[in-house]
Image (cartoon, rainbow, N blue to C red; front, side, top):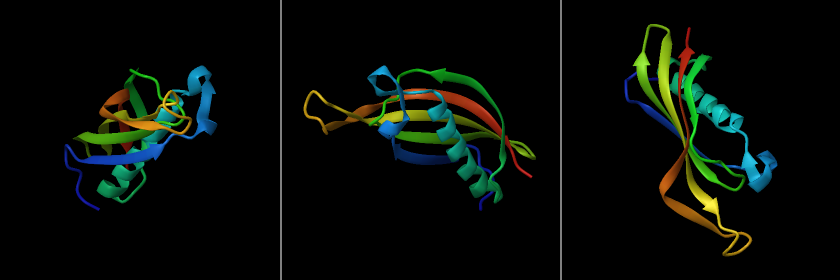
Length: 127
């Protein structure tokens, strides 16, 4: 556990399984990104406060690009404000790899630069 330090980041990477596709084109819903934000926020709170914390609010959620089943994504939480019991974070989902079925059924490409798919700000509270 370390003291909350402005600018501290937590990153997770994961593969988006086809079981999460909800729409044509293997699109996943926006709630998938919000759930991922909850995961990195939980780790941030554990690292800074030794507690999972509780999400209080989201603001400025923006869905900028699609997330699809088969994508590899990176989820980032960055601490931007630390109050006595609250922690405000900026969040970002980046698509870092995407399937390329035109090349072959199981082909995928690393994306450079990654595609910023979802951004938000959020506040969590800790005891």
